[in-house]
Length: 335
Image (cartoon, rainbow, N blue to C red; front, side, top):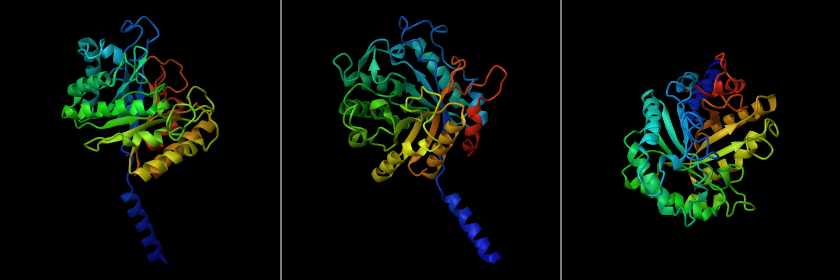
């Protein structure tokens, strides 16, 4: 009996050891993209600011290894097809270089919804070539740092899915033409929701039918989807639909990834500080762990220095205490 039990335990241990682990555990740091509704580009230090390198130490100590840094395309490249602004680039580079020197990875996030000064990519004002040019210039700046990842843009919207896919393909091609081998994350149309990946009623052709056609010659690209668990999936409400909604909103997309032999990052998730959301978030993270063959990891929304009492912020309070949601995440922040 002991021999059989020992064999069973050994088999379980070996199986657990062989199972793939989630590579990325992180947070989206927001603040450098703020101020878009004020006279643009705004005053640095007043309307917007970059997080400090020192602020990432808190998240690293918790076990996070990925910092997704949001910024604005228009500030970094004031004129389409033009040079990158040296002052803004310096701010971004200071954060990226300092953070990666700490051993963390940084996911670049032009937080623009696939638009430039209010005009969406693919319109005459912002042709595909302009988006590709932006990424060519950005890739040239960071291609020699393997800890930098290229997130093409935050949550494309208000355009045909085919238009976004064509723009994304040109950007991927431009990035690789620079010699960059960095990981690329590819969002879908319609706010890139996992639960709306198959939707056909409101944002155009479903992502499930179009986005798989975008290809990376190095095959070093993953999809980036976002998922919240409130009623409309926007992440603006403190209440979550049910304790099981986390799994329910991810399952079909997970099946699609496996069927098409693709992988993904859950680039944004979050929930209010209550018991139902806690269960929904834990369920979602358990789902990612159980399907680590197709999921690479996750990033919580959000952190950053200017959130105040925002209900999804993980920034520690003035007293240094963890936010309630950090307690939920800690079991999932271990290697």
